Length: 393
Figure 1 (tube, one colour):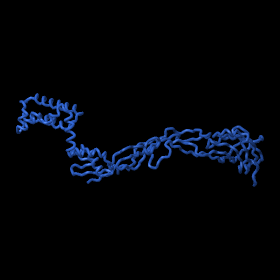
Figure 2 (cartoon, helix red, strand yellow):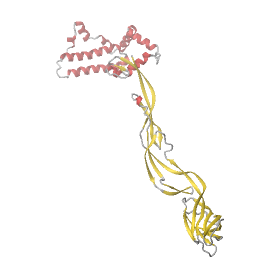
Figure 3 (cartoon, one colour):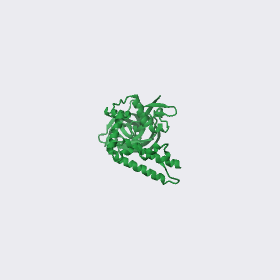
């Protein structure tokens, strides 16, 4: 314990002694602080348990040492700053290292070539100083193998799928319309006056003509039939006997060839159910068998298309689910009655894109952004990565 204490006190004294020759007059404050630190260190060690006293002369090997301790040569600087400055100037003029430092400063700051390999190596040592001093290997220094490595960082980009499901909605719209005439043929049998009901297949129709053309069978009397459409008189139909033999008072072959327009009929009304009335214009009630009648209508054909709320769907996206959320009904589109089984269909898509980032797994991710969207949902991400290329020596 005594030797330890002695060593600590001697260390404090030597530290103080070594500081004196290099101090300038403007460093007096630092000097006095160091003196006080040395005194405090001595006191702290003297106050430690086990301290048995200290004689600095016991550390000297001869009388010359004891005389130096009692009267150190640095004492000439005490309260004499000019002597310290003089010693400083003399030391700088005679010491080779001091002259080299002075010469270097006088030459100014040297020009550094940042492309110099030595400069890069030095900077690398400086930046990785902690790892090197603690024997920790990094990508720049392999402490086990004694290698210095150059790392060239190259930016790379890649894409990868997000696997987010996308919900879209399909809604119909009138893609095109076309108008054409359609003939609806029937036959009338019975004894006028009578009324028959005919149901047309399309509600978007307008009746433009009613034709009676062809042969039927009846008593061979030339007569006229009065025709009404839904209670509105539209004209007369003349009947006559067809060529050939005919037995009196027996049904014979008869012919008719008349075309009635619907000028007197409210063509704005287009009911599915049409009532046709026929009656003789004289008091004889003659039976008709298979009197041909053709109703000519104009019908609007509607071609329906579908809008996708997500817009154009990429081929990488496949529909995985579908359900109707607005069912069957008839709606007016651009003044046209359209009947559909489903007016709004919800569809779910799943998109599959290749993951090009797997080949850059060892690269650090710098940023991630959405590259492709569908219906406001990101389906493909783009990543910026930094890849290190290492060369060691």
